[in-house]
Amino acid sequence: MSGLHHSVGMAFGVSGLVREKGYYKTADGARMIRRTRDAAEQIVARYQMAEHAVKSGYPETERYYLTQNGHPYVHSDGENYIMTDLISHAEADFAEPEEFMRIVKAVARWHGCVRGAASSAALHKGRPLVPLTDSFRSDAEALNAIHKRIRKQSKWSDFDVLFIKHYPAYKAQIQRARQLLDSTGYVKRWHKAHQMHHVCHNGLKEDCLRINLGEVYIAKLDHAAAGYQLTDLCSLLRRREKEYGDTDRSRAFEAYSSVLPTEPEEEIILEAMLLYPLAFTKIVLEYYQKKRSWTPVSMENKMLEILGLK
Image 1 (cartoon, one colour):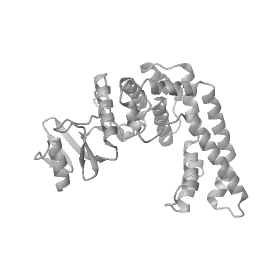
Image 2 (cartoon, one colour):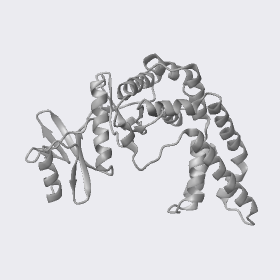
Image 3 (cartoon, rainbow, N blue to C red):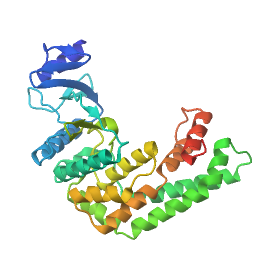
Image 4 (tube, helix red, strand yellow):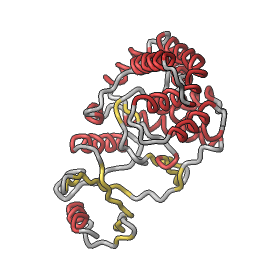
């Protein structure tokens, strides 16, 4: 163990305990210390958010342990460190429909318990949050500008050809998604969610959802932020459908609503979120706007996968 980690361990009061593969064995279970990119204010906000969820009725939430000085982090050599439980429970399995619906209900219950965390606004400091209507519009404008630029070029790459050929269909999807959102009063709901301190996990994957004796443990809160919570349900459905094909979306929405009441228009909002071609938009903007640390062939292969041509 390096001197840096030793000093961090001392601050959390675990120095001298048995340590295996980076984890500490304590009388209350195994714990892990890890580096985080979050600033101090964000770490405090995540700690307060997790404590709020636990006190509100969802104890299966990853918690940040305090140092001996009462802080949820240690700052050492320009880095921040946090200590959490080591979760050895099995990862969630999205393959089985009934199990997936149980996970959806658990997420809804967690959403309800994390609402009202007064620290939610500090979770995303430095990362301005905008409603989907704004991001959909800016993405549509960016794609349209790219389309016009490529049409004027005398030479096209293979990626250019794929984009030009399939852009009209995806453009129509974006327009339809925007129309659906506009028809539901989504922006008003989005602002209300922020005013009421609603929080999204923003990273719900199998390794963040651990199953233990029928309970769903929610971990890795590093990307949690104030937001409109159906975004999490959308990401769950996207992830399952990518791996296992069609999912009964209406049933998933009903399962979620049975725990955390929603309004009929919100199913349309979810439909709009799922209709939006996120993967296509993301890879196109990455290809044309970001620094190219990838090879053209790898990006073309990704595009073919998204288009269902590979």
